Image (cartoon, rainbow, N blue to C red; front, top):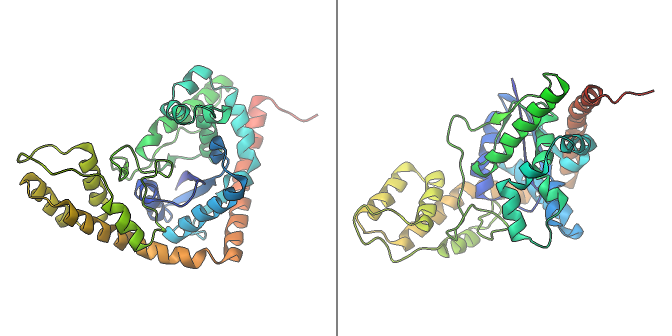
Amino acid sequence: MDIVVSGIRSTGNLHLGNYFGALRNFIRMQDENTCFFFIADIHSLTTHPDPKSLHANVKNVLVDYLAAGIDPEKSIIYLQSDIPEIAELYLYLNMHAYLGELAKTTSFKEKARKQPDNVNAGLLTYPTLMAADIIIHHADKVPVGKDQEQHLEMTRRFARRFNNFYGVEYFKEPVAYNFGQELIKIPGLDGSGKMGKSEGNAIYLSDAPEVIEKKVKRALTDSGPKEFNSPKPDYIENLFTIMRVVSEPEVVHHYEELWNKCEIRYSDMKKQLAEDIIKVTSPIRERILEIEKDDAYLHKVTTEGAEKARESASKTLNEVREIMGFKPF
């Protein structure tokens, strides 16, 4: 049975990109693997969140995890900040991570561009914290979106570097878990990049039907194709990408045909797309509304999850300290 580790930053509610990028797969893998799912509240500090909203954001992600189908009876669910061993391993890994390689990561350069007044050390060393999250449980697999492939490759590099430096075969080199499929990257509705909260182009699992309809209606389109079988602009292809993951194949085929014949009506396509998104998210939203009121249940889930995660993390950290030469007098 493989060990699977994955987390989502605690920046608010989960959206379609989270769900189809990884979360939907979590539900499938619980019966076949030992799964550690965590809420990355320490990672969120790289953007300096308001302390008044941090806990609320963590709760939103936790509730969404559970509502989407993550089962605490089958999986270990915990908060990153509840496991101090992660922070210690992060420190040790930073001693073997180099400025040049960290500064070259795509995510660092992108974040530094977006928040030039807050290019902090945590932002730079994000990949080493992510590596600590993963290898502290000796993960075999990590369900990641396409945008995280580089970070996972760096995790393998750090694990390999640790092993080589200390002459051990200790850490595994985890691989992406995508069920043999191409890693999915869900685009936003504004025609640019991936779907995300910071981009302001996301549809959340907790969105009410009327909110989803309004968001889809505002999605970027144009006057339509001018020639038969012409290539789609990126912002139109984005709509088709979302449709492929929420709609039936015959629906997608229908609108592909209309596009190729220059007969597509975006208003019809958007209406269909909104309906299909609502069909996917409504059952999850109903569970969200129920779970978010049960603080006792949320406390039980996180407390028990932290106990199990710390048992695994403590064992790893004790062994790492011994390998590195830390010994008691």
